[in-house]
Amino acid sequence: MKRVAIVGGGAAGLCCACKTAFLAKEQGTRLQITVFEQQPRVGKKLLVTGNGRCNLTNLHAAPEHYHGGTADFVRPALAAFGVEETLAWFREHGLLTVAEPSGRVYPLSDSANSVLDVLRFAIAEKENIRLRPAEPVLEIRRAETGFQVDTEFERVAADFVIVACGGMAGAKVGGVKDGYALLQSLGHSRTALHPALVQLTTETEYPKALKGVRADAHLTLAAKRTVLARTEGEVQFTEKGVSGPAVFDLSRAAATGGEGLTLTLDFLRDYPIRDVFDRLCARREAAPRLTAADLLTGMLHNRLGRTIIRYVNQKADTPLSDLSDAALKEIARACKGFQLPVRGTEGFDSAQVTAGGIRCAEFDARTMESRIAPGLFACGEVLDVDGDCGGFNLQWAWSSGHLAGRLGK
Ligand SMILES: Cc1cc2nc3c(=O)[nH]c(=O)nc-3n(C[C@H](O)[C@H](O)[C@H](O)COP(=O)(O)OP(=O)(O)OC[C@H]3O[C@@H](n4cnc5c(N)ncnc54)[C@H](O)[C@@H]3O)c2cc1C
Image 1 (cartoon, protein in one colour):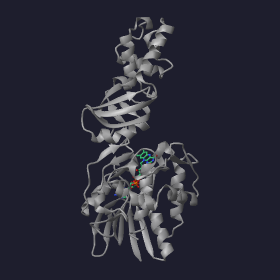
Image 2 (image 1 turned 135 degrees about the vertical axis):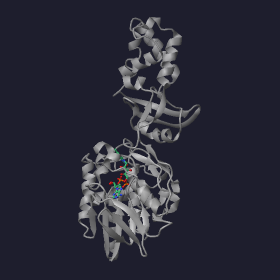
Image 3 (image 1 turned 60 degrees about the horizontal axis):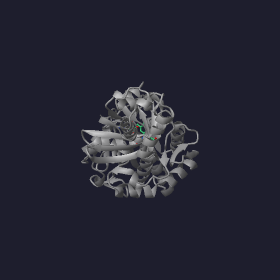
Image 4 (image 1 turned 120 degrees about the vertical axis):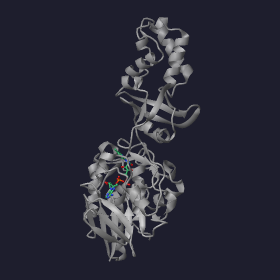
């Protein structure tokens, strides 16, 4: 009987265990699969994904939504077990899902528990999978045949080892550096690690005043005059800066872009600046006794409108009749180009994913097997692959976990 040790009972590790067990049954191979998990329960991180709703995939999952290792690296895994196959697998195991117009897919129950439960039930059905929670793997060594896997209390022999330890993001729910260290000890190397899909920290004067406000905006992240990234969507102001899906989209570029970055927000992205100026002039004419504090009322969230007035150094109680054309032009410019100097990003604790990881070139993209140590596989976030916000990271975990679970076949 061959023994398979899977290190990490997260999305990739659990999916991998199911695939390995399924194949063994189909091929009549005798396999014993052990999943080692450092936390008291498997799949803890899954429960917090998508704010507890678990955005388990995205209908638009394709190589261009992934960063780090090349697009060519993710392609075979997505081709072997892409969105359709993932949804079919979950459906077969009893999970109903619903897709939002953006392509994000959630369980119909709106509860991440459902996703983990379905995985746990699928595993419980398989007699040859043993889950070993609260048992971190401390060391993996090559043996004469196969590997030796050391936990605190035991040394286990394995013919195949699959490292599915995830990355450093989400420390409270299992984000650790172990996977990198284990793979490095077997000869692998890694790229620099950065938190991604994370809030940006900025100068706080305006964000603090706007804490809790959400706005739809076009966002540009630049290093002096060089644009590093652009996106659009929802921005949420926080005590320390900005958050929200659109900010997450830029966070990778912010984490890797060095110092001196500026975030520019266009809060009226569908209106050309001339149009905005004309509207401000029209309001001044129609209601000259209103004050500057109400100039943008109806166009933007009230607190945002007043903050913009402060941003351009106008007094809130100035009657509109006293605002010159030049002042209105400046306000229009601020609505379309509100600048926040970026200080950095929040750290790995708040990040959803790790940008960087074990070098993909050291693994065969068609099997996820190590080119350095045959019989060793890796999958999920531990590799240098990170996806955009919207279900792409879990899809990578399912796809790469599935491929690794084939054990090279
Ligand atoms: C707050 C938050 C929200 C997110 N929301 C989404 C979302 O909605 N959609 C989406 O696509 N992605 C989301 N992500 C990202 C997604 O959860 C991860 O990319 C995905 O879980 C990675 O899967 P993985 O199996 O590689 O790693 P993980 O799910 O992190 O699993 C790795 C497991 O390995 C265990 N482990 C680590 N070291 C050892 C060791 N030495 N021995 C034994 N076990 C070990 C860990 O405890 C962990 O359980 C979110 C992440 C966070 C933090």
